[in-house]
Amino acid sequence: MRSRPRFLHLLSAALLSALSVTLFVAMSAAPTMAQGQVPPTARRAAQRPEFAQRLAQSAASRTKGHPRPYLPQDGLYENGPINGTTDAWAINFGYAVGDSLALASSGTVTGFDLGVWEFPGDKTLTVDWSITSAPFGGTTYASGTVQVTDAYLSINQFGYNIDRVTATGLNAGLNAGTYYLNLQNAITAAGNPLYWDENSGAGCHSQGCPSLASENQIGSIPSESFDVIGSSGPPPPPPCFSEQQGGFKVLYDFTGKADGSSPTGVAMDKAGSLYGVTSGGGSYGRGMVYKLAEKAGVWPLLPLYSFSGGDDGKDPSPVIVGPEGGLYGAAKSDMWVWSQVFRLRPSLTACLTALCSWTKDVLHRFEGGGEGYGTVTAFDQQGSLYGVSAIGGTGDCGGSGCGTVFKLTPASGTWTVTVLYDFTGGNDGYAPSELLVGNDGNLYGAASGGTYGDGVVFQLSPSGGGWAEQTLHSFQWGVDGGYPAFLVQDNSGNLYGIAQALSPGLVFELARSGNNWVFSEFGINHHGPDYEQLENLAIDAVGNLYGTGRGGPGCRGSGCDLGPDDTLTGFGYVFTALPGAGGWQYRDLVFFANQTFLPSGHLALDAHGNVYGTTYNCGKYGQGTVWQVSP
Image 1: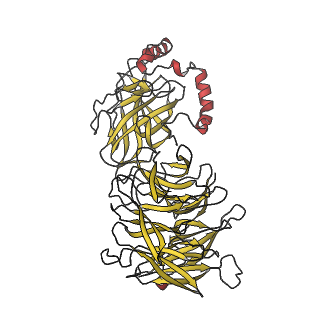
Image 2: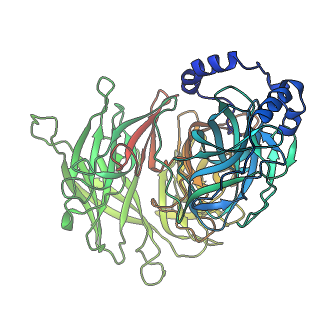
Image 3: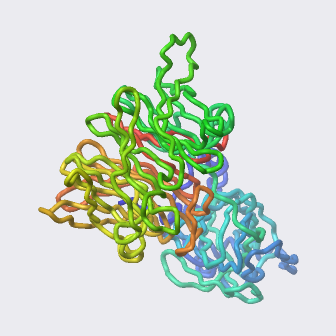
């Protein structure tokens, strides 16, 4: 299980290096203080002899005067003006303070102001900040270390300088709701304690005033003086993922031109080359098929075929690698009247360059109506090709048929299509989307509908010259998720897949027990209270599972359409789940916090434990990537 950081504890090495000379010079003239020697409040510090003497000398030699006006800027939340006379709470030397922040509507936090109590002659340089779902923990929506500007306002009765500290340059998009602004690890020029001014909400006019405040070592405290600055409106999407994670690297960045855009998964051949399709781009802007083969640590892309629309098709489905090394897939027509099953093979004539296209053959055209629109998914050991059609067939599902499972058999250079099963739209479901050839010779797949309307896993077995269908499990939203997808099978015949529920992301297992199948599942939901969804699943030769997921604070509720442009992109991850005596052991291989990571389509695994996949967008050109995670 992955533990997420509760809040920032250390300054970065770069910050320490930059400040080391300043701190050494400044602190050589100031008392050296350990964490336990610093009181949590400014008033307690003023009572300590080593602090009181310095404060008294300062107060005697300076005129208090009147504070300068404190005018809030474009405030998303205002917790009241600076007080400067009651008390203040330490935000360095191991102390952290968090105040609640209520937003009436979505917005973007660009900065914050706060009142501080400083020792005379000192100045605030930087402070660590975070915005979280709970004080010092929960989900972290944004965080960092920010340089601040420090403006003197007055001197108070204890001899402290009262200053206004302003942080700018933030970019934290938040939805309407309650959050916590946490401050800690403040650095001052002289290395003194820094105290956040206590206000208790006097003069606060925002929703949720006064804020609820906590100090990490004491607990509940009065609220502080601060404004959160920004603009209202939808929060911007989080930045695209970074490659700065162990074992993760981008193999290829799509440009959206001849190499395509928006890739949807990869397949791997026996030599370790990767193949995939894009839904956009290519020579005609209708999608294309490509190959990536590693050469001296580089993965150059070879365009294999660009679709031109019309009779040639467009928007190809993911390809599978055939027994002879050819690529098989399906493409749609421009008018959605039919689809075609195609095969791509290297040209029979000699190719004198590295950019030779492959030859395309159409194996079958689905003319719509009773035939539906076919997509191929698997081969059997005899070289026959199997697939599903989401509509068509003899079932009654609003006049378009409920979908079919079909087989394409090669003979004498042609391919013959046979419908193996027509869905009825009843307990057997409709619109099949998944199909695999099991190691027992049966077919296994997933479809929509079923007894509860939330999807089924089914089995087709040869029976009396035909095929008999058996529903292995009907999903029910709110009980076991729903919308099963990415079905895989281990060497023992057990089936696994993902239930595409919003939260948590669920992996299910169907284990054979005699003539029955036992259903169980476990959640991949170790990333905080936000909603998340699994995107795919793969299995290796020894039964370890691999997959990806994404989540975030957006798109809550059953009405969400979790498409590629959805706002559910606050984080993303690649995970593995290993079977063991105590159950499945889950861990993240990589985790992208507060970053967009939009995995798409099927994964590929090699013999060395590497995982390969695609993202629908992001990358150097924003058009998608092919990536690798190494163990």
